[in-house]
Image 1: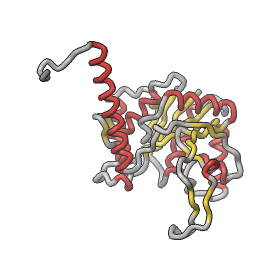
Image 2: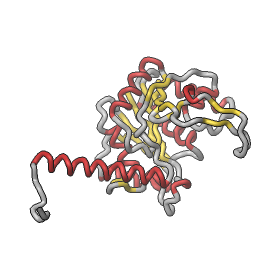
Image 3: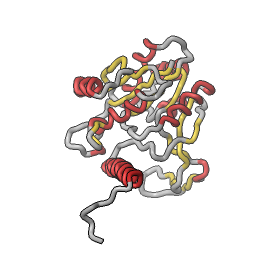
Length: 253
């Protein structure tokens, strides 16, 4: 069994979106959270979806789920105080759906609208094999380390630097163990599930993700996303014109 745990409990302060959480902002007429959910809804290997949502927006999310036919959603629970807390709340619900401790959990933030079928498939396959599956992209920029944000004395080797993405795949037993250990060791706010496992001394398996799979976080990301959909529409228009050979009858010769 494969369950996607989507955490969408943040307010998106960096987006500067006039009080609307970034996951509920619309792009090309549809909320980002719904575009993200559709990727899992349409994937044949995903059985269930559990969502941890900003509590004050749960009713609105349920309206969208019904409107857009996201039928794999089995539960919507309140998010936590941070991303880790939201993931934890979602995992507790996913655990109730699990049949075996080797079932796969895909953990993904709610702002990944360009997530591909292939990436989801790769994540599931690698998680089955290694119990951990973290998509990454190689860093194309030089990376400097700074302790104070003003000065730097160390340059990190670019060939060894990777940017993590989502979804991240884990067996149920692996990720539940990590969350239990985090509570025991008072680890309160790891940035991601992979970083939690690494902090616990575990090794995680990485695989090459997709550079288009952006996490929509800033206004710059929104501009990229809108440009992406605009381009796709233009592609469709150009394909149609090429297919049917239609021309503008009003154009001047």
